[in-house]
Image (cartoon, rainbow, N blue to C red; front, side, top):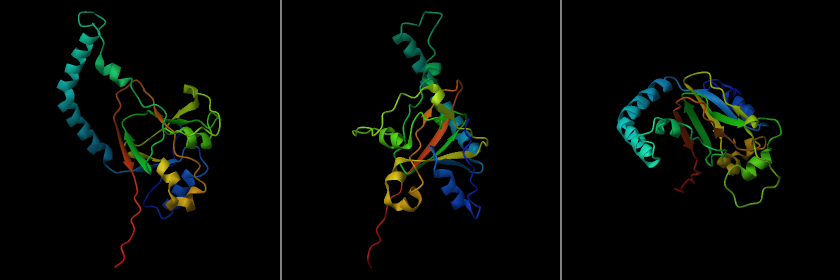
Length: 207
């Protein structure tokens, strides 16, 4: 397990702590707390679950029919099957991502030499370029689960757009790469709320 540094945004030295947490690391990220976030999102989850229940039950029956399992004792449970589908390794293409979830699942590479920052920069997102360094396939043991201790905590991860833009060159000197990550099935129901943030440079109009 890896626990990102927690940043109190109200602290006078929050900016310096954020810079420290995202520089000279393979996975530039940190935690912030959004009071009462869990309470509000759990209410949304309850509404979504109730509204989607009939559709999920119908899909389950239809899936059994397609597989020819309708009259068999070992019928396929569509909800269990769907819960095994997670996201493979990738980097978010945006500026930063804010992620809240109900249980662990987010994973980042271990600092064990399995991958380098330059390899993440060249192969972390879909690309037509040839990787500058060879990279072996990453195994399960090459990944660390990101630990989040508070129910209102949000993981903030650096994306590809942060690295590419000229706006952040003063900070980027120490930011090696965006966060390469995947989502692992932990065997339990997991709800997540990712918020992908982008910045646009606005040119001031001459008066």
